[in-house]
Image (tube, rainbow, N blue to C red):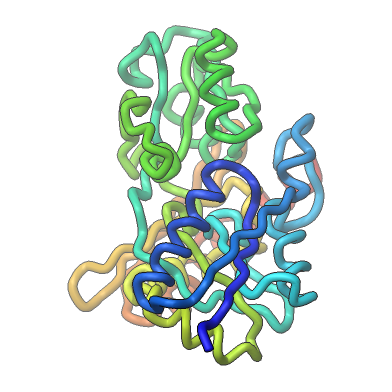
Length: 306
């Protein structure tokens, strides 16, 4: 009998695109099955009046979807990996991580071609403390204001003149068919990405063997290992996607290079560490330990207490 699978996802256009991407991949590998997409509104979608870092708790964009998964109202959950806390609820696991898109941040502006061109006091919109810190480290003369909402909302606020520029994930713009809105792609040395940025993760119940088997062909081993290293680092540092923490793992031949960063939100103190290895979990722990030795735990505690 053909298998029926229910996908749980956020209702934003980008999240729905990701769910459709997963559905298309499932149908390619399993002709004859049916796949239903069930959209949900998460806390992160509702609470738009405060900066993300000021909203307590973890998993603002995944909690309601994971609740539905645990209650068997959906069979799988599709997430942007950068929104997923390092520690997952008991009984759930990330079964497949698909091949990664562009990991970089995108500078988007209607008047300036590069961040170097922004004048004193120019307003840049971003909801991310990670982006804010790295931008202010390089350009302390800028004003970085909080910017919430989906991609279309953020672009509209830019177009209405609320900001001189905004920073978005390149992957999201490309997936939504908006690569022409990218003014400049920020080099990773300028803006190290969020943990898991550009990767789509598929979560399922640990005891659902049939669903796990169906998802197996969608997994990309290289992306999985890179994201695993980044999340291993993040887990040691506190596992919260709202913190000013960045990481990027990339395979270089038989070894993986993992770069990590922790910063104060004002960009005045930015800690860097990197290491190479072949064990993603051990590599993540090693880079986290190097950051902690430089004072990362104190920075994170200060942000949490703000």
